[in-house]
Structures are given as C-alpha cells and as structure tokens.
Amino acid sequence: MSFKVVPREQDVMTDNNRHTMPWQFWYEDLVRRGITADAPVFTGGMVYNETTITENTTLAVGNHIVYCDTDGGGFTVTLPAIVSGTNYIIKNSGTSGNDVTLEVTGTDILFGVSGGSESIYDMETVDLIGSTTQGWM
Image (cartoon, rainbow, N blue to C red; front, top):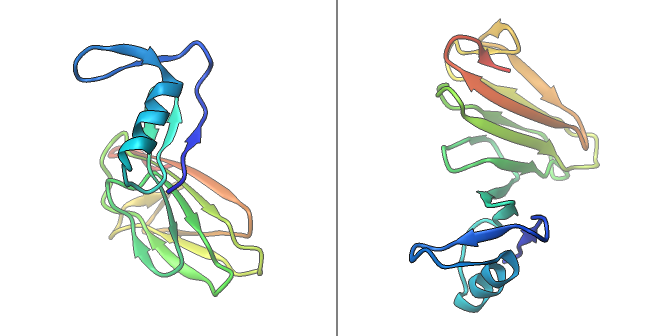
C-alpha cells in the first residue's frame, strides 16, 4: 500500500478522542497499523481514495481519483446516477494511444448532452462534479 501525503507543514489532524497531532504522526500511525485502502491521498485533512482500473467499470460512491490504465486496450467508464456534489477525477494514465470512453447512466447529462459520452485520451484528466439540475460538468 502506498500513501501520498500532501498537507502543509502547519496542518494538524484530530482523532476520535480529540487528540491533536501533526499530520506526520497520523501517517506513521496508519503505516504502523497496516491500514489497507486504495491508496488514500491526504490533502490538508481530506482523504480521497485512489483506484486504478484496466477494464469496463461503473464508478461507485467510494471512488474519487480514478486512474485508467489503457495500455492493455481502451475501455468504458460509466458514471453512476447523479447525486449533487459528487466529484470524480478521472485520468487516462495510459501511453499506448488507447482511449477511455466516459458514459453516463441513462439520460443523465454529460457536458450539456443528455445521454452523452466523452473520450479521454492518453495522459488527459477530467474533473467532474455532479449536479441534479446541471448534469455532470
């Protein structure tokens, strides 16, 4: 398991017992306990899951940062039904010229098009925010 630690030096975190400590101690404590997850990213107190996929996938609520390894071939990532405020960062991490096709569920709106789709090319990143009135944008 790997961690990416990206908080500022002055950031501190508070555990469930209301103990405050510098972020470095949190990281060391997680490693010591062998916490398992899809590589969380610490950003000033926020934790985002990272996931790498290599085949057709429908994203779930627990996904946030999604790396699409297309070196073995292109595939489709389907967004779930929109829940306002949902955020996905999707990156085609491949370098072999294969695309990720981003699709919506049903008639949800993607970049202004009902039921739309979008291609994500090598090393391109798409940052999506869901809105029940505006769609995925």
